[in-house]
Structures are given as structure tokens and as C-alpha cells.
Amino acid sequence: MKGIFRSLITVIRNTFKRPVTVLYPHDRIMVPYNSRGSIQLMVDTDTRKILCDGCGQCEKSCPLKLISIEVDISNKKLKSFYIDISRCMFCGFCEEACKKKALKMSFNYELTEKDFSALKYDIEKLTKHARPKLRKFWKT
Image (cartoon, rainbow, N blue to C red; front, top):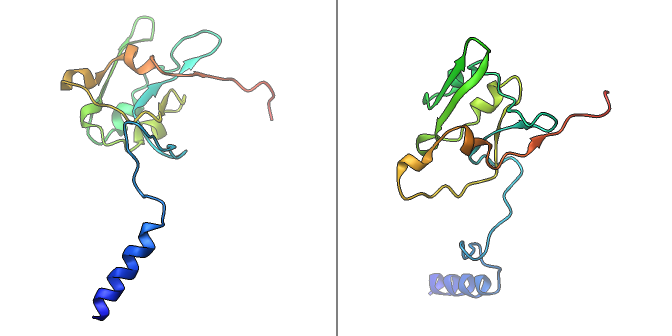
């Protein structure tokens, strides 16, 4: 009898509480500040050029080796930049390893695609939603 009354009290108490889950496609929750979503390549505001210089530190720091970078040696420009998001575990090591702060983890967590080939991001997809990195006007 004691167990039945406890469960009845729990049911009554939870009836008046706010629901824990949301109806996802229709209602969205606020993404926390420190959350890690898909990766972006940052762009300079003045020149509109990608901040990545192709040093390869992000490629070396990726534990799953999902990043591949090609650099044109003659003019030292970034030739290609690929990330396989389908296997990425969003650890953030690539963002921490980048000295130029060219890589940033975005708040985009909706990564559903019909085939896996769409989850292999190149430079165009990585810079599509990138916000330009603002420079500091005052030096401290």
C-alpha cells in the first residue's frame, strides 16, 4: 500500500510541473554558449579572405584524421580544405590547435543529409555560414 501512495504522489506532483522535453521540429531550445556544432572557417572582414594559412596543425590534432589540407607551395595559399563531418566527434581539438583562430565550432547541430557524401565539407561549405572575424579597434 505504501508503494502505491508514493507513486500516486509522484504522478500528482509531476502533473503540475513543466515538461522536460520539447516538440523538436516545431519548438527549439536555446543552444548553450559552450556547445560544439559543425566546424566553420573564419573569414577576415576587410579582405574577405579565409584566415587559414594551411599550417596543418588542425590536421595533426584531429584524433580521427578527418581533416585534409592541401597548400599551393609556390604562392603559399590554401588550395583545398576538407573535413568529413559524418565521422566527426566534435571534440574541438582542431579549433584549439589553430593559431590563427581560423577554425571555429558553430552552433549548427542540424546535420541531417540523405547521403554521406553531402557531409564531406570543402572550403565553400565551411565558409558558407561563417561570420567575418572582427578586428579589435583599440589595443589594450
